[in-house]
Image: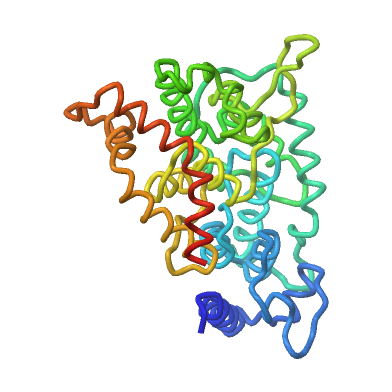
Length: 349
């Protein structure tokens, strides 16, 4: 049996146990999330769901907390866990999951009469974004840690009305401003060190900024990496003023893997980036990751200089000594990693 097969088996076991534990049938779940019911098994039971929203809906139908749903999203789907600072979607999902879970915990849940938070996501999202726009000019430049914001969200005032959500968004405007700052800073660290080394490299002197890295980085990667890693907001080029628009954040795990490879990240480096973004780490036993992990390990052994370079500048090991030539070699190896990996992965496959 493949790893996907084992995951599907575990997923079905999880659902069967929840049916027995809660008394909520799979047909009830279908009604809750607006999915067609099939006696042979709902689509989310027959195969592993791909969309995060399905795991969210199933979890809410069974009255599960955010932590459990996040485990499903990362473990079964391999996607990014819900992130409280993501005003573009996750914030509202977390709010609704907690609202629903609160009713279950307080014994207020009634399968027939309880408010279906899942089906009202769009309305809550519109309310959250409206508050975000209203309070935009009142943002204060203060950093708020994600763990604190998630606790506060879990304690917000719940109910069919939007008051609790509105108050929460207004109270944490500054937190949204720093969304994804940790993974962005991690990426920036690579970009800045590579550019610094390229300025002294005879073969890469044309690379003096991130825009000059086209060819190694795709345009979409450069657009994402441009600007401050401490803000998700963009600047209106015509006026020079900040706007309420949220800087596009890639939501696909493979996009971050590809971006990391373009900057010379190998297995351990990529795992740190993926973890910071809320994704599961690379899994050598996974069908989707096995060839990549094998290729990265082979490449790592063949390129020891780049690892010394990373340990020195990113790991803080001041005892490592590298000549200018070795630093140049390390950067050259890192910039060519993505193209070389394509060949190695093809060999493995």
